[in-house]
Length: 71
Figure 1: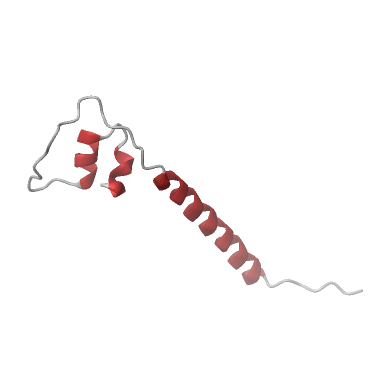
Figure 2: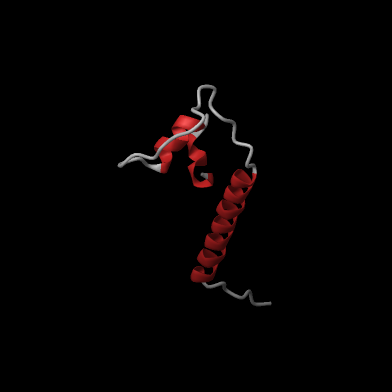
């Protein structure tokens, strides 16, 4: 029997799809847990200032500013 050779580009595409799928599913799981805890000393209200970023605002309100996309 002769073995059929697999195109190296095909293997690369399959590996790339697997990596992307893993990253997407992992990030969906992280952001689906919307119970990101508030910081102990978070303000009750905040007025956005010129130059503020969502990262800065998330750092004021949340224990983990990496949840800034949920703001």
